[in-house]
Length: 289
Image (cartoon, rainbow, N blue to C red):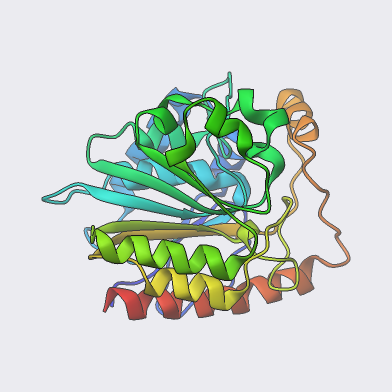
């Protein structure tokens, strides 16, 4: 089994068996929440210089770094196209005017020629509700490159815009898991898996974003139900505290209503996160075997 890699940007990931730790804290202010495209290209070159030829699941740290999945997915080379499955409480396909951020990277991945389709699974955020419809990039949904798998959100607006095939809406997680697994059985494809732990309910793990409804067993069933080979994976959604030096990032974070991290609870939340990481890595390793 390949070693998990920790992109140690915010010191939030606990000790993992056999891990390879890349000390990258000097990138935190530049990358956290969002960055310019030029900055992400520089970071991609840094990854190319430091990552080994083969490695396991990549731990990204806080969900504020989920856009780092983009360069990791871009690095994957396979003989045939692969799908990307993202477990996330948010679509991560929202408009952003300053490059790319943790809520806008999915559109970029859906444009990659080696990616056949992106499934974002477990969305219960209002980001896909009618009030925020205009903030979503519609082109990848319309072109059949992206699908949303939603829980308890009214997405009727999508039908009126001719996007019904791109939206799968369910009242409960079990129904979502069952339908997703059934679809996967029908069309086996190699898969890159990206997990943002804000997809879980708060009793599973606390993050610094609003959270979804999945329990651990739902994620395990989704991972087990993936079709084809697992060509790569990453996990994000750790909880860490940081104050931006950039006024713009402080302002954008406030606009996104990003919750404050309770300093008194931080250690307990990180312990809960670490236990969840171990279980997720076990499920990914079993699927990759």
